[in-house]
Image 1 (cartoon, rainbow over the protein chains, first blue to last red):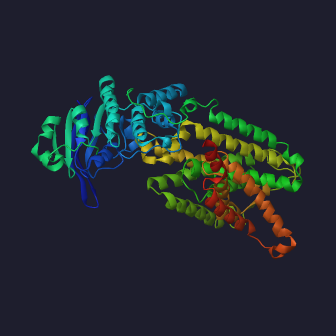
Image 2: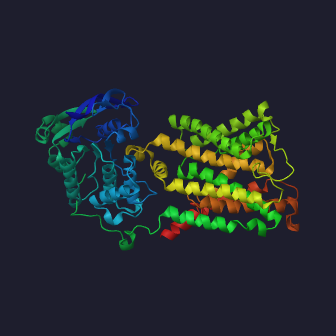
Image 3: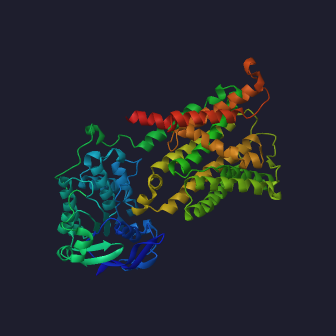
Length: 244
Length: 349
């Protein structure tokens, strides 16, 4: 059964079609990679799914409910949570407070909330930073904070916008492990935008390729990477996985 | 994820430990001490200084109200005169026309101000007015209210209301002999409660949502923070506290008219102490109110009896506004986070 269903979504900015007639469906517990060249509409798709933007056409359904155009906070509380490609920490708060905030709507006791926050902070490897101001974190730390906050909401569906970007290869592995564990142990459904093809190949069950706002291909990582149209539009001669 | 952790921050060993006393308890304890120290002040100070102390507390109420919305919430208001005036006029109207105790009038004024703030807020947020546009909208609403009141018969048009005098003093009617310390104590209770509420609010879950929304609204919403509800809660609380200042002001000066209640000078008086003390800090309004409240007295004295070399000031007005302006320029240039904000930042380093 699909937990996320996007049908016929279109979005234009001043006449430029960022998304046209995009369909996608994600099964519960599935990991879907989203790839495509810059400007293909990947982040716009997340913006529409998470409620940051209303689509011009089409619907977004979460667990059977139509959430099209709902306020982002309602979609997040319904269980679909996104991260941002550019980190957006709450500058006046500590790392632990940033994370705790994301779990507030679960109405835990003060003690349980604090423990949950510290637990998640620990889990993403930010333990030593828990009581430091979030803006003290280096880039890699801020990336993890994005992830930690999203995790703290206890999402059903996680929309990850380039969580690996800006990380050196040694830093990527633990993040990929964490994401795999999330699905295995908690059944979290993941949709992730990623430029690093090695990560996509390793993590994704299926891959969706966007190009100029349209779905170019959907399929298993192998199918997609051997699709001539995908190679032509995005991958080129070689997968561009370097340090994008 | 255990294989790699982000390199620990320098000096991390002590940073990992949670603070020993929760910050709100520490702040409430400091507040309790400040209030206790202030209680005997009107008995010690000469009468003229006692009046300055009351003025400081009125400034403090306004500053705390403004700081909740514009400091904690990041919604810059240039129209807090609207809520000050609604508090003043609601309590004065109920007292003069219906003989209702100003305490009840104060509560009614808080409710009216909060309700109006929610309506103004709802439409501003609904149509995504932000930054300067939001500030202009708040200014426009305050001016609109001033004009409505000036032309409304039930509010006595431009004449306003005078509080009917009684023979003896009465706490129920908040009326005492002119130099009674009771005015100070009433104001102290109100201002102390306002600061306490601002502390509790800042550290509550709602307060955390509010500061997160201020820091990054879309990020907060994306994590499930109920944005609209918390913004409206913030403006309502801010307006209610500002209304208390208006209601008390009317009882203390026994008089209110459209300019004293809704004039743009009132909005400025709510902003200036916070800018000087430190926007978004708990103690900024306190420090700012003490400075600005004392300054108004200094300027008034200077204008009444200027020293010889400033003889040209005799009988002029507006010096306080000039001084505010100079102070604000200096603070914004030299201490952009205000006195408290700058000190706190130094302390942390």
